[in-house]
Length: 220
Image (cartoon, rainbow, N blue to C red):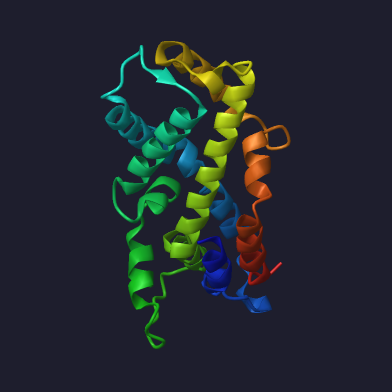
C-alpha cells in the first residue's frame, strides 16, 4: 500500500498549481488563510473528540475491567478503535474537522471544471481555500493520515510497554491499564521538538514525499 501511495502523490501536488507572480494573494488574504487553522482548535476538535469517544465506546463495550491486556491485545484494541473511527461519518470528515463550511467554496468547486465559468465575487483567498479543500478530500491525503495514525499507535504501544516496566508484555488487568493510558495524554500535546509521535510521523517516507511534492507545486 505504501508504494502505491508514493506513486500517486504527484496527483495531490497537481491539485495546487504553481502561481504566477500576479497570482500572489495579498497580506490580508494570507492572514485570513493562516487564521483559518483556528477552526480545528475552536470547532473541529470537539467533533473529532466526540467521534473518537464514540468509536472507543463501541469497541470497549464488551470488555471488562478484569480482562488482561498485553501489548498485542492493546495494539489490536487501539487499531479497532481507529478503524471504527475512520469508518464513521462522511467521506468529507477531514474537511469537516479542519475547515469551515462555505457555500462559495462548493460553488467554486462545482465550476472548477468549466474554463469559461467565472465568479467575480470569488477572491484569491477563496481559491486558496478551495485548493486546500481539494487536497483534504483527496485519496492520497486520506492514505497519509491512515499511515500516520498507524505509526502513532505503534509508538503508543511501545511507550506503554516501557512505562509499565515490561509488565505489559505479560499482561495486566484493564483496570490498571486505563490510568496508564490516560497518563499518556499530555505527551500527545508536547511541542513538536519534544513530541515523539510527531517526530516519528515526520520521518515516515510517504509523509515526507507528500509534503515535498505539495510544496514544490506552490509558489514560495
